[in-house]
Length: 565
Image 1 (cartoon, one colour):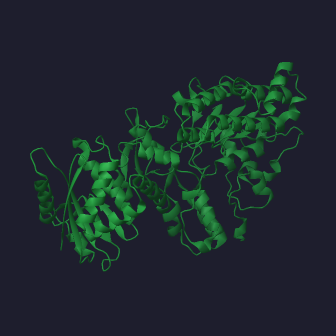
Image 2 (cartoon, rainbow, N blue to C red; image 1 turned 90 degrees about the vertical axis):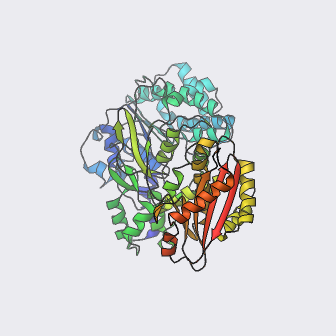
Image 3 (cartoon, helix red, strand yellow; image 1 turned 120 degrees about the horizontal axis):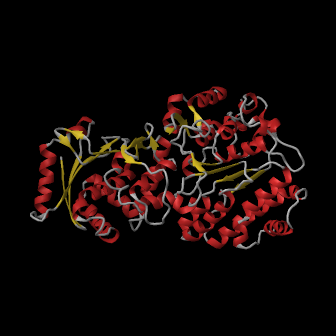
């Protein structure tokens, strides 16, 4: 087939179908929305998993335009057309309100509010022919006209959804379908730029006025990346049903199933095997289904000669994910090296994210990374005495690249320059004690707080922190942590990919106790390396040069000693 017809950046169902782009049938979503007993549905999914395309598909199926036309002919041969269900009687019969906030990413509250007003105004103007048929009160017409100009007051903007749904119901005789795409995009920007409270207050009032006890709505569907805490956004709303990626309902509607990827690769006659594509873009679990990242698979299908690349990484700003990591007390502690080494961690999962800048709870961070696509569930979430638990890991090679970049960014923010980081890491591998100690001690002194290195947690913190630094050496070394070698478990090991060019490294960390001198702590670390024969694994990989580091800490004081074979 002609791979140039891959729908890169096409989020309009009508455009995709009219212009003959490759389409994987997800129209079962139309029926699932109708079959749901819920009046208001919130469907959080990671970015680039087909949310906007699915929302425009709902519009195309259900909408009756003011002139009486519809776009239902676009579904010829698709599942929505060929299956019976509650969606059929509403086909092309309903007025539809479609608002998308995905591009509202402003740096101030004033600009954000203005953009929301512009989006609402454009939709009111599109639907205005309906109002000519309605027996609306003069005040309602005046309010809608004011909103259509885009320069309205905040109290009137808060009431816009309520006014619009009532007017459409009266004009058409049908309760409208309300679609709000990427409802939380402005809130992400608010967190990043420091106007969180203003944004939350506005959207709480805006959504409550339109969704709470509104008899003029047939159904409402909202998409976003996160399921935001009721206390933040949905306080007072008891008719919102959230179907997260952990739920069974809608599990096949977003992302690509393995069978769908196999069909696409077969249609395109690609040379890469399914196993290779799986290692890069597979790994998610939605409900009970294994899901592929659709953006990356389609990008690969459009440029197969470029090979398998991390397409998803650079599709949007990672600022809010970086904020979650940098403000966590735990993400760069003892669990970081486990994730980066490819193992799983067991964590409590909080389905509601509490959006409060600089105060992410530990459960918020893990849940945040899960629901934004940086971690995956390895099996369905377990309910343990009212709390939800899941086993998490990095999904695939592509997301590992993204995760590594986030950690690198965090680490570099702790250093005066990337050049200093490179010098320090080179000295570490080469066993140059003087150079490494000078750079590392300065970094610890200037960037870490005493809270980070409090005595009780110092060893686990420094352990995780150093592993975060060593991620930068993955082009030349494999980073290992807390693995068995010889007769024990070493703290950190760097295994060179080319042992004839690069040295291997083994590290043992110690906290200097109150009854010890730093020299005694370092001696104990070296003795443990020798006694437990940690270097056996490096020797098995063909290493001729091995640096054996003992690193001891007392608060923000760092003590180092290296020996080489």
